[in-house]
Picture 1 (tube, rainbow, N blue to C red):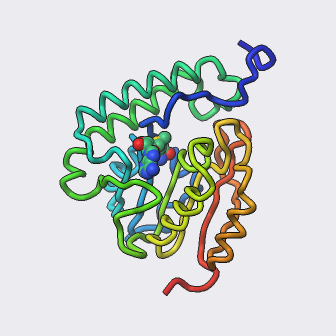
Picture 2: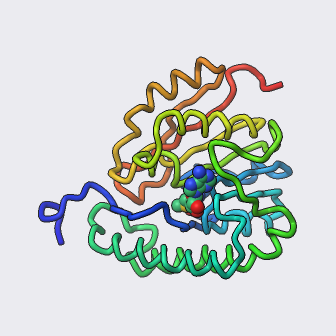
Picture 3: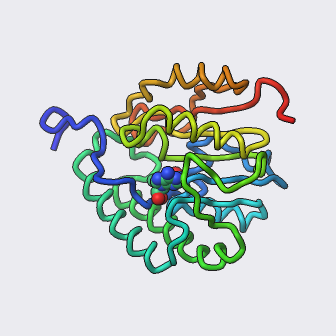
Length: 241
Ligand SMILES: C[S@@+](CC[C@H](N)C(=O)[O-])C[C@H]1O[C@@H](n2cnc3c(N)ncnc32)[C@H](O)[C@@H]1O
């Protein structure tokens, strides 16, 4: 299949998938230097089947994952994760020209990363749930007190699936992510599945600014999907008290 014969613009998924990436990928697409966040609390929302929290915990970081599905037990999540993995790989296989493959070395390498993330997540989930590191939450509301976390990360959800949600959902969800952070929120990517920036990003930045939040589009050292190389970074315009 080539660009001109299919031209879908991006991956076409049937649903929001329970899927996730590894800590090494998180460091790239959030342009994150964990040495600057030692001794802090980090929230991954929504985490999906990412292994960021499992791996960060081993590095001594206080990290918490939340997701709509974290009321489910391990077996149900594993079955959903496997079905969603098959769905993504099947859809991705036909549109590989829309992606840069240097990091993974090709589709097989990408699958290897996905399995690694999933295995680490699945291994950590039962005990992590008991320890309060995997918590059910449904945006636009989060079950955490104000400023519970220093840094809040939100990957491959909000703008990526922007056709599933309206502007109000995006604004309220981002205000909520900000409410539970004391320092910073990073949201990657700002592009949708078609690699085009979220069409209302300027309205969003203005509305956040009117709430005293500084929102800026920042380039990141990651461009797996071509042109998806920016995150939205929120900080406060005045010191958060
Ligand atoms: C693609 S995964 C997240 C991937 C992960 N953050 C990463 O970058 O690898 C998207 C997740 O969003 C969750 N989700 C869908 N709607 C949600 C909502 N309203 N609130 C919280 N999580 C939601 C789904 O259950 C799914 O696990």
